[in-house]
Image (tube, rainbow over all chains, first blue to last red; front, side, top):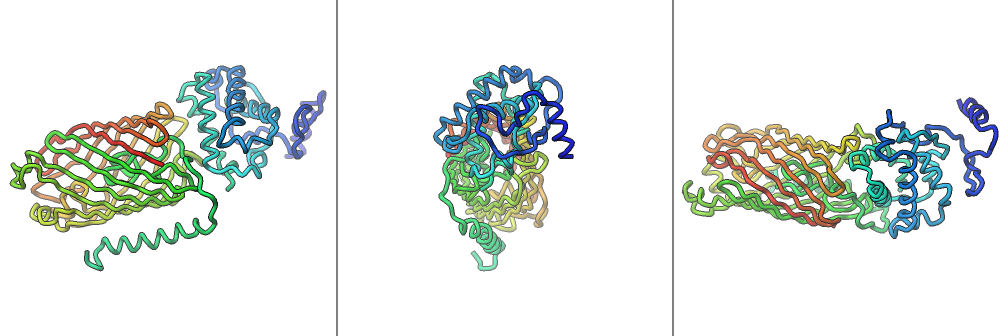
Length: 163
Length: 297
């Protein structure tokens, strides 16, 4: 299985050949095996959700403002403080875009590895949800669609809240 | 209170359960966190003081805190019915989003009907309710969407009008309710579903005492809540609450409500509801508007 995926990753990315854990311009993270299952959720069927989030452009704006809100937040900012913002934005965009079925693949780590040792508490995750809601509202994503998206993220909690 | 009344036994059982639940949590003490819960996910105070949907207790824990904190809340509720006036006020403590302890005082003013029933104008039935609830498993918002939060609870109810409720046919002036609630916010549909099963002998939730000539045994009653989340701050919904019908002279009906709950800010939630409480103390069609304010920290 892993050999197969590694092989297919090689076949699909023969030109740039930079592994997703060592992208130029980003801090390197520990090597891992990329794959769609790392996204932690299956994508929505159909194009409805991608449309509700205004496609890749809308998702990019949401990720942009969500990232700014999170890094600047007085409650959870300190968790993000030392975190590579460039890599965070890229992988988060890929994950949202993949789950919303807006035409992306996710190349980041799985949720357990990417949140390991961050010391996220339940109140932090709730704050994060509030900031994401703010970012989605700024993009004028309807509340029902916001909740539908959150329904894909809510089951990730056991991998995120570790203490 | 007698030493071996069901109430004191229930309270002893609750204390032991509480000790078993709270002591291990206190043992690995960390600094407490403040203001952790998402808006509306602490529910609103029920008429008996437990957190929930107004009529039915949910598998929520009162107060704004997560598993890392201790939250508190207070509420005041008024329900202006066709012939009666209901008032309640209470406080609740939520420990580590696991255990909830609550107290409520209920006043049920019979207004003019009191005179007609020979009790006197504005005769008021009063009851104290002390409750404890423990969330056994699951989460209302997170984790597996198919696994609801499940809580068990107990409510010790002490009616302060013992002689009158006995004269009406009630067998006891105090009683204990036991319930289990399963609650989930189904995010994909923005719908919250709650189902509660309650073991009770209470007449009109205890305001008319416990047990009666028609029945003096515990019966299982179903309570259900359905709510739709319109925004972070606003939810609308309806509830249904089955009740026993123990008193031959004062038959009773299931209760219904339709509600709008609004989180004014992180600490204040206002609820407005249309309630249909059916027949109460021989007078039918007790419908009216309920207003409830809750402060939570």
